[in-house]
Image 1 (spheres, rainbow, N blue to C red):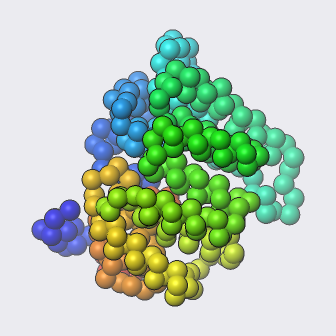
Image 2: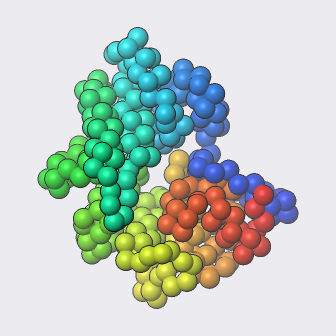
Length: 321
């Protein structure tokens, strides 16, 4: 984003676009079409990203979320084209996303057994489509990234989670969403430890080239660590001085390159971290470069992502419309 464009956005205020953290016009159109129940548009959009794992993973994730509640329609398409790995992948990931929407809060005093069972059954239903997609496209890392979320939801043994992680990264070592899934797998909120999670994030960043949004794993890890330690969420006191220094350092290493499909998510992560630390200038810089496109993480740690993004923009005098 150039200076002139940034000035125009600042003058008119950011227009908030919730849950669309990408700069992909074809994906925008496909998400809108799927929400109108034109599911063929999703198939075409996923298929167009074959050979580009980062874009493919982003499109599968976004279109699965757009199709939540309608996996039966994708299943019908799959029945007519059973050799199409794109359809199996989309069906499996949609079932994963549908399961997450009914996940009971295990911290509640009494979680009804039937709700837990419903969640597990919904999550398990994603397994066959995802493994079918993996078998139909053996070199594709994206089914394995979705299987990582499946195994996280099912709380499979650590050895099995490790094996799926290996399958994803041996096919594409720098796949960003696979690293996010791995970070969550190692987090204290999911049975891991803060030490292991942070060490993983640091090592991943050290192996990534400058300009890669992998640097945003560091603020994500700190968000995840703090969210596992505190309740309820609040704006103040999120990061220790040491954590903040680390976030600042990695922001400088990233340098805000915008060519990666996940760059807008990275701007959300760094922008939110700087906003919470009251470092207003870098916070404004990163949030401006989102173009108003809000990612779920890290804003969901604070509450409703769109509302929290708007609140941050208001306090930073970036009026979000």
